[in-house]
Length: 104
Length: 192
Image (cartoon, chains in turn blue, red):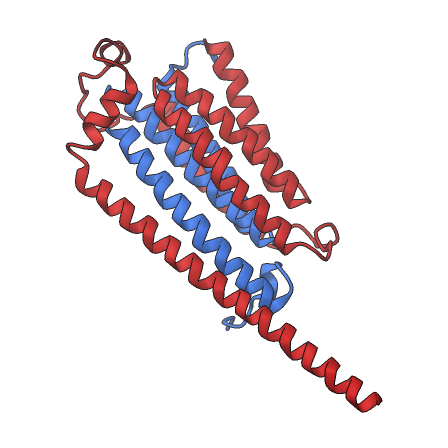
């Protein structure tokens, strides 16, 4: 079964699976740091899809988009982790169930 | 080639699953580094050597180092292991995963005509014209020069935001320490 799958389909399928695993982690985990890591996993799945498509379509543009995704991921990690440290100073906890001030 | 791809795909899936299920955040970070390095190998196979190098330097080197530093700062009280890992949203996750996974599997299995025009830059053509890095630079600094400049603005804004947030947190801690010191001093005065 595996031999007849071409490389492009493999890249798309793998990136879909990793994206779903990242989404499950994002929704399930309580530790805020691990939630951020799941987000990184999802962004990497998107990057893999961009690069697989870049190879599939014989264009380099997908790799340029992947660079911009990495830029945004770096900016997200820096600001997100700074907010996380500030939150920890406030609450002495990283359990996202404790951050329920805006809960209805 | 397909055996290599199967092994890399297996490592990626196992690493991703361990990332979202490990109890200790440090273990999560290390499994995530494994996934990143595995992805870099996949980028090389897809003919994107420059992106593979960027993946190792920026992701495995830079961003994960930041995560590990934050874990070191934040989990001093050893409250990592006792917390429950998951909250009670299994049904939502199962439904969403089945939905997205079903759609994705259908797309891959039955095949769609992926939209987009076939370009001329096959891996062989890129190699012949001076390599992946050169081809990428020609595109990045020509067609995508404006988004490139915009990316630098995003990075500067993120850096300033992080510095401001971290300074506020540090000032709060200093204020707390000063208040504590003042209280201790006044208690000592009373003791006398």
